[in-house]
Image 1 (cartoon, helix red, strand yellow):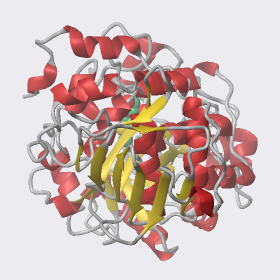
Image 2 (cartoon, helix red, strand yellow):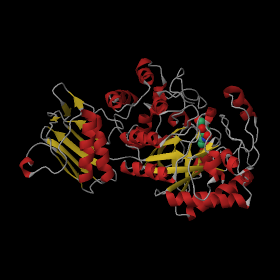
Image 3 (cartoon, protein in one colour):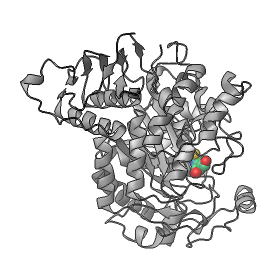
Image 4 (cartoon, rainbow, N blue to C red):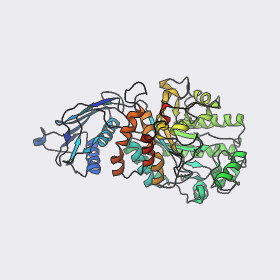
Length: 518
Ligand code: TNX
């Protein structure tokens, strides 16, 4: 029988043997950090408080849980074998042990007499090294607790990157010593006139530490040269005048919010109207201060500098600007990351990573821009019509947008493979997958859950599991059953997933599993 796991492991099956039964005194041995993780995880899921680590030798023969870190196998991978004689994890590294525990968490079942784990053999490791989610904390601000809850959710699906979109037109969300005016003047606003907020340096460190405990790297983004109206609220001299396009007028007609005005907080939903003064020395000084301090605060290897939708910017000036920004970041010892538009710049730093947010079937040359990163740092795939968590999950969903060809059902979120999106990219050119959650319509953790779940599970499977066609159960039929089996775990964890989206996955057979996209 199939194991009810998401993402599906590289290989793994139930063996048909007798299950492992948890007892209040089940010994847990091995790597100390993993032992503590298993004990905490089992207590959370089952209420059974297993005796902590150090079990004396008298217990040595009793069936227990053992986690060893062996350096065998692939990075972040683990092997798990279990039956009524015990549970044994052999992990390649600490991350692999952590993911083995996430697997155990998904497999625990109550059977009337108590809690069991099925007899099974699993050999697992990720397909991609970059498995991400993005949270836009600029359109709406989310307190540290909420970010930590998001980290838990991401980790439970074996994701290892959280990209934080820390600045946009509507607000600036990170306090910097070098530029205190940013949070003093440009952090109180958010979409819809909602309360803003910002992270202190201490808050940011707290988030990074919480992420590290979950084997997650924080990828901070400061979006330039567009999406930068908030910078001009703090430093009017750095901002070009807003460019009021037809799109901006249409957005105001559809969603309200008024037209953006130089130097005043913007709370609407329009995009593409703002730009820094890109040919001004003062802007270069600003970038040096901001990215310099951000690099010093951030232990992870990446700094994302945005580069998307700079619609008001002259293309030649844009290209020169993003090239300078990428070099600045590389000189700070970090890997520059940018949205795919930056691929238009021929002088981009050679290490720059591109993040593709076009469609699963590329349009308007977005794939050309993404291919420009192949001789550089590679590509992260975030196809908007499959991986964007802020698209409505169904037509009548309360939250979400629809610009990426309408609602993105769970079936559509699942029906793509990372190697099939941008022609000409080899497996090695794809760093991985990221599911972005833009938060124009998102205000609370419950809102985050309602858009992210269950679809984040589809993105996680694209990021972790073998390609479609390679693994026999990397199919929609298998996935929709496996993801449904996670409901008790999600209920227990207080994840407010959108149940109607799961129901839809079983309702219509004429849905998008055949991938009807042109
Ligand atoms: C496009 S995707 C944007 C964001 C919006 C999002 C809404 C990208 C790089 N830019 O600024 O929030 O659409 O779905």
